[in-house]
Image (cartoon, rainbow, N blue to C red; front, top):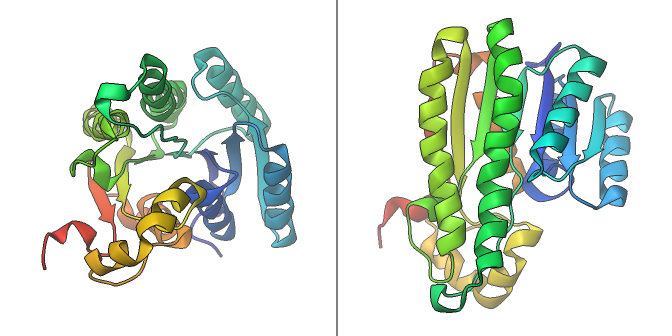
Length: 251
């Protein structure tokens, strides 16, 4: 028996990186998992097959997370097919790093729309169904960048800081209906998104991490699995940092 038997989950940005790890973990815990991907149909099909081979159930949906009408249609389709959405994991995200003086309006707006507005889109779409069911688990993916400034990331840091404020407000609004809302703030995780930074400075990064290693998608997936389980039913409005100790500030 898995911790999530009988539950249905929706994961955004689910075909690669952290999202893929979350899909695999939630399916292994017994949940039916729908996931949203932007364009990589091959990766999505491979993930669905991998989950099925392990005895689980997954379904991929190609959706532009910035398009609210497309998001609403996706959520309605999943509820129509599976009857409900118990768990939402907002993981979709991009980086468009450059110094503020050189940042284009498009680089700003793309990151805010993909990383932050998508959280609004999906959370609003599932809120009424979860409130009606008097049950729900929402996990939003933030970053240590939300509270620790990095050069060239004003757009990314702003989007993640917005997610943290959004999470706390939403947790307050939905608590009385049995819906918990939390966020996870990963540190340096081995994904496609961080490959450029890792190639340039991986050895130096590891020196700054007390546990002396980069995180893996599975590390974040484990934290998600806990927050959406019954063991975390009394936890809401929290930001869980999963960074190997990177932000402790020690020497």
